[in-house]
Image 1 (cartoon, rainbow, N blue to C red):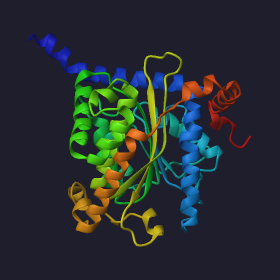
Image 2 (image 1 turned 135 degrees about the horizontal axis):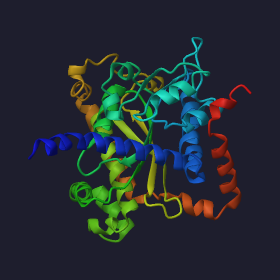
Image 3 (image 1 turned 30 degrees about the vertical axis):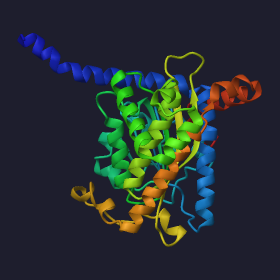
Image 4 (image 1 turned 180 degrees about the horizontal axis):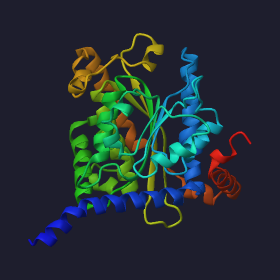
Amino acid sequence: MSKSKHRKAQFVPEIKRLMQKAEAKVEHKIWDQDPLKQYVRKFGWLTIIQDYYQRRSVEGVADPLKILTLPGENATDIGLFWLEGIIVRNSNGILNVAICDDSSAETVVSNLAKLGNLLAYSDKRLDEALQEETIINQFPFDVINMDLTTPLIPAKVHFNEEAIKRIFRLQRGQSFLLLLTTKPDTNQITTTNLLNVLTHNLQNEPRFLDAYRNRYGGTSPDLCKRNLVDFVQVVYPKILARYARYFGYKTREHFIAHYSGGGRRNTMICHSFEFEPLARKENKLKYEPRIPRILENEISDRVYGEFSTAHQRIAIDAYVEFIEYLPTHQSISVDEILQGDESLNSHLQDDAVQLIKWWDNVGN
């Protein structure tokens, strides 16, 4: 290879990264004013968070929820949560939210300055941000909004999966909501890998096999794979539940939906999960970290290694119960709902538009 070609090759990864950031920025702008995404914000995020906060309050925890999000330039989710009283500021003017955004972090911080400072922010990709002390020091969070424009598990670089692993470790056994928006990956390598996950469960979990047979009329993994969205919305939660089991959590799914945006290229899938720590003696304690502090060199093994045998069995039982449920869940088609309800569609469109540059109207 000539020196010229070698120099050009060195720039290829950076060029690809910049292109991905630019594409993500455009995609965020497309969805900002879309009633389909606003439906998810309202019913898949806000309603779930409000219910979680109420249950948490009943069990004796009155502190504001701490939130980590990937906001996009317009920070629409932060705007909605601010207007609904989910995001507040403390006596020092600090908002109870931290952000990771590798294309718009500085812009968001500047736009929200009139409201107050953030807990922390990073201009890195989420998996990289989760290795920065400023973000790590804010863990655990009560709500993590993992609003992605990429597949959860792409074919080659599994940076989103790495982020998931670190989130579970850094949460240190505390209860939390994970709001996941992502997309299926049509790459054959990814499809094969996910199919292997499904096949493993069909071969090794009799209760999952029975539930699968009842749903699809047979036991072949291909029955589920015929519908890519359906396939991914069974396998992705299964993968998350497996991490949850490892770290001693019970997984609950409060919301499952998909939307295509009227023929847009990419269908998006949405899940709202609650991860509840098991074997806590008092309900109130589940909203606190089980381990006060984890040193970085212990983070891989310490949480799981401290579980008793009985605790591990409870976690396994909870995992089996959850994956047995997966073939029975039904994903909401947001497109169909809004196509059949013009009033709701119009209302959500208005709400979304009002959230554009929402910070300019705060206090007016």
